[in-house]
Amino acid sequence: MRRAVLVLTLLAAAACGPSPEDKAREDAAAIAAVNAAQNRLPPIKALALEQFTPADFARMDDTGASCAFYSETRAIAMARPSYGWIKLDGELIRLVSDSGSQVGPLGTYSHYTGRALTMRIDPAGAAAEATNQTRLAMPAMISVHDQWDRVVFGLAGDLRCASQ
Image (cartoon, rainbow, N blue to C red; front, side, top):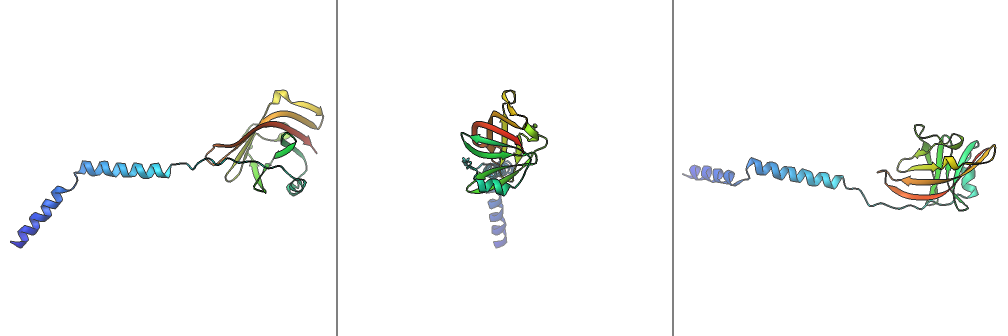
């Protein structure tokens, strides 16, 4: 008798559980919730590029063709044929040129990549003004993007280039 009651109790409990369709719906909802949480992007953290100091230029320790992006009278980004530089929180950040991007003045590129940031420089090439054979100056736009390719800094200014 006890055995029959136990079997009936177990059968009743199994019958009260969710149907396979309900279980599949619950599982799909749980999976969707986990995917949504994992794919959520963090808030955009706006950056402010800092002005290079003479000591920064000395630390870059490179000669040859280069273009500096100026905001008014402040150099805030450097582009060279092989790499670029920006300064954040007092630290110089080296970015590697993307040789597949558009070639800019004096062999520089329009795109530079780092571990967490990328820099894009868009010179107004048609407005390039040759000040002499080794120097160029032109209006340009700079943008810095985070690892999700969201703009975290953007500014219009001047691109000043020289072959040293």
